[in-house]
Picture 1 (cartoon, rainbow, N blue to C red):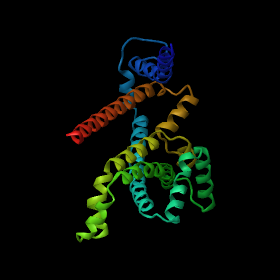
Picture 2: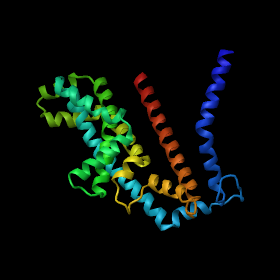
Picture 3: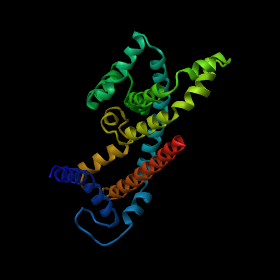
Picture 4: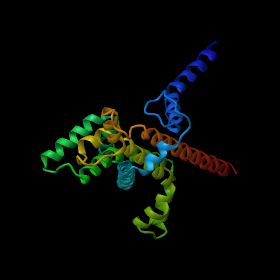
Length: 263
């Protein structure tokens, strides 16, 4: 009976998470204004998604912002993780603890803090303030992704490279970085995802004329008369499909790496 109840609980939990997503995907293939009104199979929502200039610009702006913020966060987070790992003193521990504040802190607190800081030093809401906000959000998560890989790495590799005549920079680039690359890639993907779906920090730091997916969806839902609202179901479907493909590819690569290690 315990296994039956555990299985039922798992099914209900998964249904609670995935059924709404499945409904959105299903109704992205019909040209109806509301979910529940099936007007027959249609791809008009996808057509509108790629032909509406405002929607297209919003999607491209969001992707560009996520890529830029993800790249900067990955660079800073990787360097920070390496510095924290090799600095065993109080300074390294202090930086490590400080980097975890944004991870456990409520996002609204971070957003308001950034907005107040920008206002205090005289920085107007601009694209630069938006990128700084996203980098502040994403960088600590990159640090958390890279540090475990540094701990798994054989610590003698770096010292051996130095003993063989490599400079610290060359040893870092050619020895340490390849060993921690899976963690760096995971950190980049995490930063990319956080930037793509962030609303709170974006709302407090973006220029007023700039929209990301999250702010556009909020405005569209708030203003039910927005004609582009149904097309967001098609956008949701595309995002879900991309995420599924990425997860499958990562699992295949992890499985191949596990098999190679066993050999």
